[in-house]
Amino acid sequence: MDPTYKIAIENLNVHADKHHILKEVNAGIPKNKITVVLGPSGCGKTTLLKCLNRLTDIYPELKVTGKIFIDNKNILEAGEDIYMLRQQMGLLSQRPYPLPMTIYNNIAFALRLRGVRQKREMHKQVMEYLKQANLYNEVRNRLKEPASRLSIGQQQRLCLARGLAVNPEIILADEPTSALDPISSQYIEEKFVELKNNYTIVLVTHTLRQAKRIADHVIFMYLGEIIEQGSVEQVFEDPKEEKTKQYLRGVFN
Amino acid sequence: MKLRQKIEEKFFLGLMIFATWFILIILAVIIYSVFEKGLKAMSWEIVSQIPKGGYYYGKGGGILNAITGSLLLASGATLVAFVIGLPVALYMNVFLVRRQRLVNLIRFLLDLVWGIPSIVYGAFGFTIMILIGLQTSLLAGIITVSLFILPIMIRSMDEILRTVPVGLMEAAYSLGANKSETAFKIFTRQTISGIITAILLSFGRAIGDAASVLFTAGYTDNLPNSLLEPVATLPLAIFFQLSSPVPEVQSRAYASALVLTLIILLASLFSRGVGKRYHKTKINF
Image 1: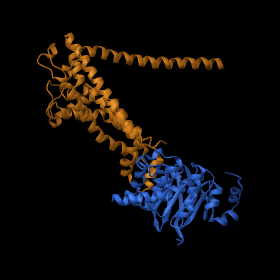
Image 2: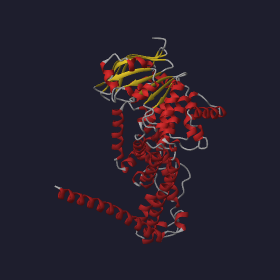
Image 3: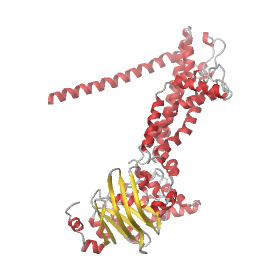
């Protein structure tokens, strides 16, 4: 495995009943960079992301074969260790899924899973993560309110705070800004750029502009296959494959 | 074509309106007759005393034995069914997500036993009692009734747990929660009002059923002292009083029916209140 990679994917195949969703995927995701997975709808981007922390386990129809190394550990063979391994990866989904509890407890729940027990320490860290997600000023007087009362943009930031609270090394984001207003979207993007110093970020998107703005590394997928991958300059300015050129020109979406 | 559509629309609309009002009016008549006849015979004596000698021939006393018996029996059975049923429903919806065919088989079997008449449960409970040497008692009643309401409890919780979006499950897992943490801490919170409704539904069935307690809980004019003694229940109290030839006793049966109706009404209001309080944290997707 290339030492600059945080995640290495080898011969990954995903089948759903008779459909072959991911075909022989081989990819490397560099450490402390933002890797953007690009491609038209239905090309397998989200499935690829879900393989990385094995959320594919939830779906009865999905069959995953191959190898995914995270720090040289094949997570597809991790067995029950997966619950702990998932803490290495924070997840931001397409639309926010706050937990059915108070704003405070949404983050405290994550901290408790990480082993924080002491009340004082808990309080300190909850505030810390709320500040990190730029949510503190808006919610500091309503920490005991249910998280469901927050706006969608605020909920997504709460989910980011919660994801960071388990102290991950990787952040997986599945079109995290697609349901958000422009200001919240911009904030999330800026936060990602700031976070990449300490985290490896994998971002799924279908917005080319977003990819151009923040990507370091790009993986372009089409119909379940990786067509091209490389640095953002290489993929955007000098694409090697015809399909990539077409996609960048906007021939298909 | 257009005319036909219009006629069809009118016809089915009329049918729906008729059916709705028909049901509502029948319900109203039932409730009216229970209240009208029940209130006449209702007195403080009836709800505060146990039957005195000769109660069923028109002498004094009340049905406190049946009220306490029914409340104890139904609460006990609901508690037992809940303690067994919640883990089953969570197991089906969190642990067995990859085994949909098995889950569907379980659902099918539960729906099947749901339809078994309660008298069969009564007979089944009776054979178990003989097997373990238990006499007609509160305990035997609780066991039988809990078996009888278990499918209702599990399936109604199952239906509400199915509505939890997969994204919430992903969110919990991505934080490192394992299956039991996801089940007991996330799924139960998200569906709390539905779970309370399931409990109430089961309680209603438990307190209203006569056939399953006929052989198992027995009947007595005394207040229950222990789990191993027989208890009276409201449905049986209504039955015995209605079978009396004395008109006063018959009208007391309506008073008992009124008490039973009020208990269910109160339980329903209570559960709505509790449900609403906890509903606030639920995430609306």
